[in-house]
Image (tube, rainbow, N blue to C red; front, side, top):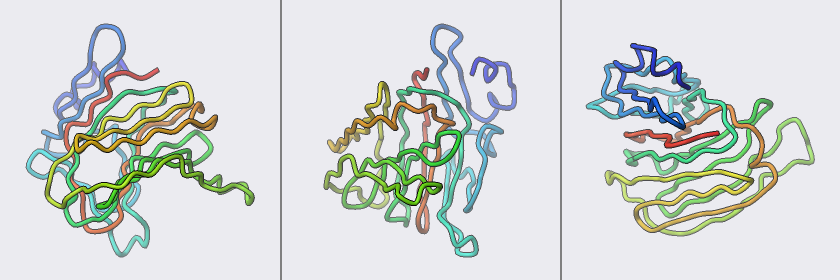
Length: 196
């Protein structure tokens, strides 16, 4: 990640990095367009008024997906979000051979679950924890997420928190993925405090 600090295009897009100790990744979406580290797979993604706006496109017949490439085993990060028409979005993680696990945020609560291995017919998604609570449309929240030694946690500034432990969570992750179902979610201040 230290190469990020040397890339002027990323700095122009709102990225900063720490020159000491663990790398710090930060994107405040203050640029005019997404940096090269983000890759839109599906959906409509753009910068609007200093925030990242994402929405599902009906023509895709698939949820909106945006990838941020940053291979790691453990992480400690946060992101601000605001439901802007959508009733659901995911912060998702893949491993090099497929889907791994995700945090699912809905208007009425949050879940942490592993993903089904699409290459294994016997595989099933495993719900690690679900808690009920409200995420209001148009209100900004902060999600703090972390994974280390097979335990993942996501906690929110409205008091909700989910935690789960599973051997799958120890796998190497390819980066970070934002997935949106519906009309729109706004994001800001994507920060990875540390990853290993």
